[in-house]
Image (cartoon, rainbow, N blue to C red; front, side):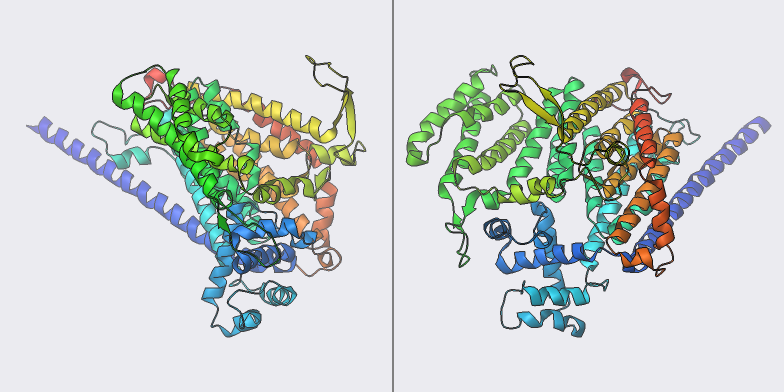
Length: 639
């Protein structure tokens, strides 16, 4: 009797102990998260006011006026107008389609929110006689008068804050995923009969630390709310793409990456990683799912330029004409895929994948007479049929939808070749940015190019390094060809990134937390190696590397040094754009002493950047103790 009472009392004590431990953790975690959110929001508002003397005013004015031009002349007409009548460099649009759409939404929001406000009247005065907003010199002068107010840029500042929160959330979920995937961790909460809450609390401190490190990143806050720039838009799309791939939603991951590139074109530098990673891991089907989502999204975003056009671009701003032949082409391609796969699925005939492109070609030949002069050559259909072949063995309705979506994207993009689809959005939104600054290093950056320029005498990325004799490499090139410095550095970057992608696939297959390190290496290489890289591009790696805390505290401490360097480079670039700060002590931080300190670091701190990149690169191939064979995983492996 006494023993039974003692056992019951001990069980009750353990139960109450677990209860207090569990809810104590809940209260602590909620306090940290809510406190960091409040502090982060206040810090962002403080940074706007604190950095006012060093703000990059031309960027704000140019981007806002781009949005007003989209309001005045039509979103689809902006790129075409600027190609037809090129403005000066300071007023030229150099942003991808969804970034331009964001600026247009910014202009629409300001016009709607402040149209009746007295402080806004002087900005709207020039638009009283017209339903379209003015975009001329007077409107630009009015914007320059009012752009210092936070309310003027509130729309994009809140948009930046939202994307930063999404990036921090992705970092939390990504670290949580890998902590559990390589666990489950040992915890007093994981006892028989444990609850969902117990499993979340058993993840430990690392997911919350990743959230706080990213959300409170000072370099990110200065760049997004002090400059302000839009470079932070890269991070959430990249981290969410990785997370969705880890969750095995490869098609949705492709959609997210497609949207991300349409916001910031720099993600083109790493998009091919998501094609090679599953291929190296022995999962080509997932590669094709990602490609279908990416290409379909890419085509869908630019559908307005693919299916409409203006017979004459300026003068008179003629209305856009719907391109019915292009629409018929896209519809016929999609119909061919539907008929080919429908025949196989619902009749049971020709089950071999090799028959699918034959059925697609037959469907195309049936449809072509109806198209008449709208018919096109058959080679694009061969490319479309390759996608059909890749998915032919699946046979599921969901997979056929993925095929159809990818086919639509390819067909839409081919409208630039066969019909009136415009390519100005590509020329200005993506290509122009790579040709705008023909410099070895842009701004006060610290990387390999800074060393080549300051210590080894290289100054032009188009300088010839060596030449390849004619037909020296398996008959290539046809004639002797000079290799310039930019091409050489780009090749080095591509080779090293290819190797790092192998590390990603290895840790993916091994279920090793070093995966979190490997996915950061491409962004470090992107900043450290190629030419024509802005100083603020280090923010891509130093911000996304908050997830490294899930694997290594030491590497996270190293990343804090990169965060500090990003902050210094961004602040120095802001001062260089506002020369009065270099000569006068107008600001407590951004003053001549700060500029002198930053100059004293250049370019030799570049050796530290290259060393940190090498450390991350080598660490990406090392094993950790947080690794578990696939057969022993508590969760189903993503591989």
